[in-house]
Length: 299
Image 1 (cartoon, rainbow, N blue to C red):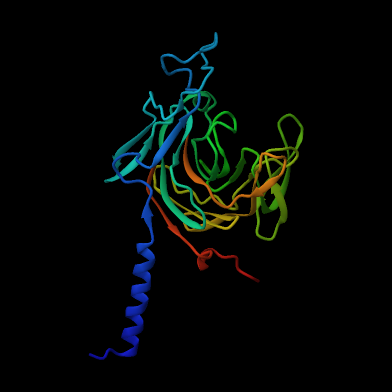
Image 2 (image 1 turned 135 degrees about the vertical axis):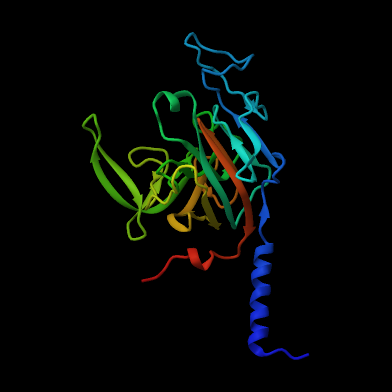
């Protein structure tokens, strides 16, 4: 049988699209946390974890530790008709993939709950979580909680900010905004700007480790936000609800000998950071180049 050329072309394109879809694979099986490990820092003081030391004000002096979850912070729950990883937020910590990844496109959905814990509740702070990537080594290195990694920030009004954790370093183009703090001190805030000044971000003065997103692309509270993370080589791109909001280059990590080495692979982590949050549809696919829709456009 002979098919018209236009039909053959259409069949070919459909086959390519189907093959591309087939390269996605889930990182969450919808039933349990198989394939993930856990680290929990010191719990909020309002909780009760027998066996952990406290100070005279009731604050815990030691972490819960690895692969222990006495407060059941991480759970699997049916939400809006689909399985999700439900995070109560009772404490700070991470779940981490057992696998490491390089040259990948990660996609997930996230939405907020309502409850806050610890100082997040006491200070009426924004709901906060995070997607960590290029994670190397155990958790607990940064602020006695996080691993060495880069963070795709998930925080109310700040989806897509960068934090470089554990003395990792990464470059990004920034628009610099000068402002006056309440104490009168002059401070600089760095916002991603493709035409901005190249800046290296690391947890040291005077610049620090945060590069803020271009635009606030978060959907209204209670709706599911789609996050895409594209990592190719030592470049990473943060995408919120279809819009590129941050682009990073030349990621590096301390080599333990006083120098730095390229950071282009590692594990993936999801944070609990004192607030109730849901993650679902977590999937990943390998890539051989930055997808065209997220590549930098030349002017």
